[in-house]
Length: 127
Image (cartoon, rainbow, N blue to C red; front, side, top):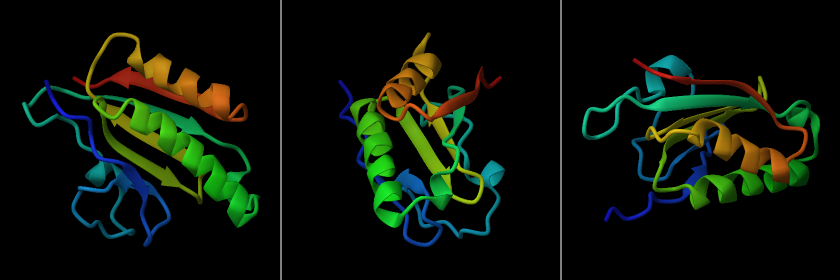
């Protein structure tokens, strides 16, 4: 049995979410270069994206509270979550997970339950 993934923490440089055990990344590096496409066994990962409209315009405490909620959901699914990034400029949450049928809808539904304004943009499997 695998141990759960480490906590998803707020990254200081670009104010996004990323695994705390990941290598330090430059904030100017494009997201498409940072998002992993395969897990450690070489299997393709699944992704979903959500937007949280207006989050960047809220107070710092409201932003932190929302990110704590999202973080708690991602930690709950820690054994499946491989990568998470929140971009404040676009209010976009990108999450890559190990494939499991229905999980690309289950995790966003859990986030939406706790953050009602969050909207699922896309869920898809990589080939």
